[in-house]
Image (cartoon, rainbow, N blue to C red; front, side, top):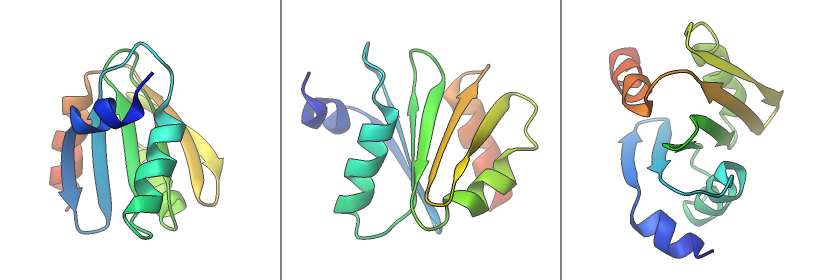
Length: 104
């Protein structure tokens, strides 16, 4: 697979404390993408979500902060450890983007 092509073709949303990437791929690679993007953004906390299956990853110093903010959403299950979290959603990623906008 070509992660550069996937990253280039994804939708991105930049919030003050979080950058979100929504990607389309048949591969399960949200952790890989989130880590790669987080490294290139010099420490910004990154959330990567697959449009295919609603699974995603959070990477960065504020991953636990975002885990605590997102865990109350009834459509999202999230857990992990400092710096690294994984989640799954039962709705379209656009719903999460709308909720993140409201949280700002």
